[in-house]
Amino acid sequence: MPPKAPNKPSKAPSQAPKVPSKTPQAPSNPGWVLPGQVNNSVTQLKAVLGTSLAFSRTFNSRNIEFHWYALWAQTLSDLVADIPNLIVAPQFPVWFVPMHDDHEDEDDGDDPKEIVQLPEEQKAPEQPKAPEQPKVPEQPKVPEQPKAPGQNAPGNQADDEEVGCGAGDVSFAPTILEKDADQVIVDFVILHLMAVAQPQQRDRYGGWRITEANIGLLVEVKRFVSRSLKAEEQEEEISGRISEACSDLVIQAAHVFIQDSNKKYVLAIAASGPYWCGATIHRTEVLETMHLLADKDPSYRPPNEKSTERTPNWNQVVRIDHASSRNWLKTIYNNLKKMGGLETPVDV
Image (cartoon, rainbow, N blue to C red):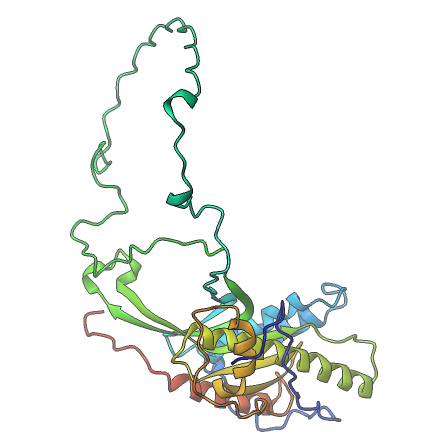
């Protein structure tokens, strides 16, 4: 039996690595270069300006988290710039719907056994009809204007509908409001997409139909620490912020694993401003958190897997503009690339 779930799952403890006591100096060897920055001075400058913006006491006087999104959005886009089916998605929701059965929804309808028909004599008397209103004289009709070439006449198909599109070519799935969904919003994810080429349907979806969207990387960004802190205090505060991001990522990963029962691991980046560390979070490392999240769902059955009682193995904290950071990003890049590319037909 999984442990009883509290109202909100407590954040799983995560031991983030300590920040190096000395900020590493940029070596003469720049290390691995992000694909989007190879021989591209424009994207390199964008990363520099994004860092400068977030550090600015004028334009980020409140030292808030959101100013760091520009730098991370640029870095993540440059990371996967040469792989077309890896895309960066900000503020991405990850959710599942617990199948509660201990209450009825307000709009579930009445139980047929509870419906009681009134006898004929108990029916409410008919209300007297309201007097008829005087008829308003009809307004003269305005003659219809001739339609421009290509304009749809009444009863014809709309402009955005395509003749000859079969159900296998177009997604007709409706948008469904899931009011009981348990979800988290991830600052950034990198999605691995699989798609089917449809050269004959270029006007719809650009000639591609998405068949799979799989989360490859979770990124949680926390605001940077106070800029007035001294070296040791700053290192301690950065470590604390990153540790908080690591805990959030454990919960986010648990949502991913509940949503996708076949997924075994997901990559993760925990950041505080320009400092970050990464890990591969395995399903077996967050089973307890998954149980806490899903315990109220009567359809949920704990897997046969046994928790290894390990926390994710986070790498050393690095600063994003140093060579050590780019080398760790290369590891993430290689793991994302292993997820597979698209098979592009000759005529696409």
